[in-house]
Each structure stands twice: as structure tokens, then as C-alpha cells.
Length: 200
Ligand code: GLN
Image 1 (cartoon, rainbow, N blue to C red):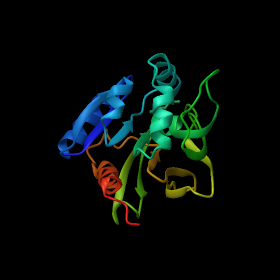
Image 2 (tube, rainbow, N blue to C red):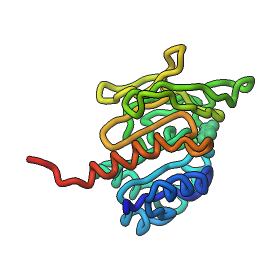
Image 3 (cartoon, rainbow, N blue to C red):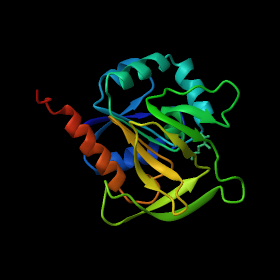
């Protein structure tokens, strides 16, 4: 089976593990550099990105994670995880840093307080021809995408909520909370492809 790490400091760790195991992956909780070295792909869950950033740095994972991303490790970030993968965070907490990798600017808590949580059906043609029910919880929005970033999904008003660049996948919503496993399946497919020998 594919060995998938879940960054396990904070947030929706358990929910992702349940989905990944249901899909047949072997799941490793990642909190140390050694654990990171053994995985074929990594999920960075939703939670609170500023806290996750602090813990990543405290546990000495900041540089190893950046190096793994630069080396092409497939990483799937949802919500706070998308923020962690972004180049720039708008409305960041004081000294909040990101890992980068996705050439995007995201705005934290972009929906304000009245609508800090909602569900909607999204079209993500790369993933499925049907609609995906997406749960947004104090979600970020992607406000700028660089030339090498592929936009996978937008809200009806055009705002970007799912992107991909190389082996990195970032989405604003929480696919681990509502039983729809298609985004995880898509990521596992990407991980499997990344393990195939490159043609030259
Ligand atoms: N608002 C959170 C943050 O800034 C993200 C919320 C989430 O992951 N559901 O990190």
C-alpha cells in the first residue's frame, strides 16, 4: 500500500487518517523528520495554520518539510494546510511563516464572521464529472495564482478554492468531514503516479 503521512500536530488529523485507511493507505502520523522520510505522500490537515506553523518549527520540521516539498514529495493541504503550502498569507498572524511550494497568495478567514462556515457543491472537472459537496470552515481564499499554478475549482462568484502545482494540491475546504472520499482518491492517484519511474 501507499504510505501516507498526516502532519499530526493539530487539527483534523484523525478524520484524515480514517479516510486514508478506508482507501487502503498505510498511514503514518508525522511529527518528526524521520517519520517524514518514510512516506510516499503527506496530508497537511485543516486546523489553525498559525499554531501549526509554530509547532512545525518547534519540532524541527520546518526545514525538512521545505526540503521534501522541493524534492517533489506529493503534499495535499486542506484549509490551514493550503495556507501552509502558500507562498504568501494575507491576514497572517504576527510572525506566521509558511512552507511555500504553491505560488499563490491566500487570505486567511476570508469569509468574515457571519459566514465562517458553509457548504456548497463544487465542480472539479479534474477530479470528477459530478459535483463535490464542499464544507468550508473559517476558510481561506486564493487571491493570486502564479503562472505555473492550475486552478481546479472556483466558487460560483469566481473565487478560487482549489489549486495544484507540480505534486502539490491545495484546497480551501474540508473533504475529510463529510464522507466524500473523491478528493483523497485523486490525491492517492497522484502519489501513485509520482512513484512510477519517469520516462526519459
Ligand atoms: N482559519 C484557519 C487558519 O487560519 C483555517 C481554518 C481551517 O483549517 N478550517 O489557519
